[in-house]
Length: 160
Ligand code: THU
Image 1 (cartoon, rainbow, N blue to C red):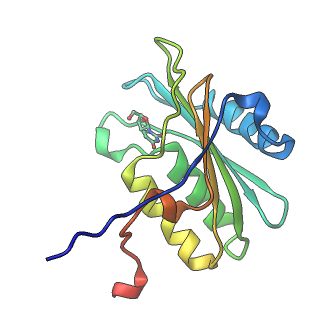
Image 2 (cartoon, protein in one colour):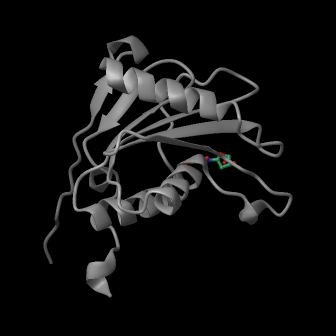
């Protein structure tokens, strides 16, 4: 038996103002999308925005359902929308902003496991990394150079 160590390196920006201007603009799109979330059960609103290599920005927000598992996260809403509308475009960057309506969320909110798996599918498909930025309503912003950093030992088509 031997142990293996898995490491990921992430960049942490102190706040929104430290982000490069193109990322600020994409995060602002995610912020706007967040306000369109339909989240009457959790009251936790999430927005996601993708920048495609054709220049388009695709956004999504979480969409809940009285039958709870039928709802969908913001990240998957955005990425499936993008895949459906521009199947040949590559996704360059993704910004995510999340927080409860009850109190201001100041810690960065990472995408859930199911969303990481969904984003991984597109990263593998397009054979180029997707930069991911995530934040709470305020505070630090975390950047991952690729989805792969956030999902070590990912399951992908190479195993099928
Ligand atoms: N949610 C997202 O939209 N993205 C995530 O990565 C985590 C959770 C949504 C799902 C649900 O509508 C609410 O946040 C609370 O879990």
